[in-house]
Length: 180
Image (cartoon, rainbow, N blue to C red; front, side, top):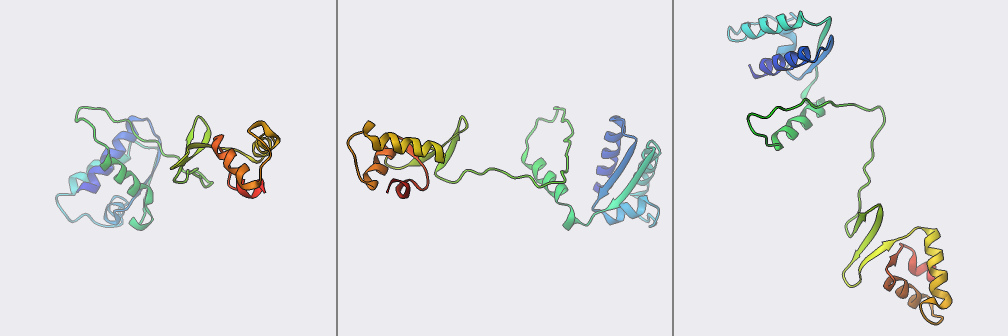
């Protein structure tokens, strides 16, 4: 019954939005085959629901029902999980979610533990020095030249140079190797 109720609500929403052509994807094999007329509706409790669905289907120029096995229905699973997390007052109006499926993969830029972004600048957190600004290769060579030339003290070896750059608040992955 809940599958029929969900389908009825979805079709009512689609008609309210003025949708003319609709493809209904459902994981209820029973509902899809019964509404398509392939299977007979034997449960007397479902017959009013089926009549309501048939009346709603008449409002569309084109409507098709397709069965999607639950295993292949990741979007519905994600939406069900998402809706169970959200809390909303009973009297609040909820706008429908518009979901767009892209042909290309999307990538998330995940920042590693111990790093964070602030104002588009990547920083490394350290236990003893606080925050270090991460720099690219061009900035790194400029910083090494300035520190090595004596701006931050006399001439020094690679290890000391790398430590001075750290104390100045800069960081890059190959810093010690580049300072040698």
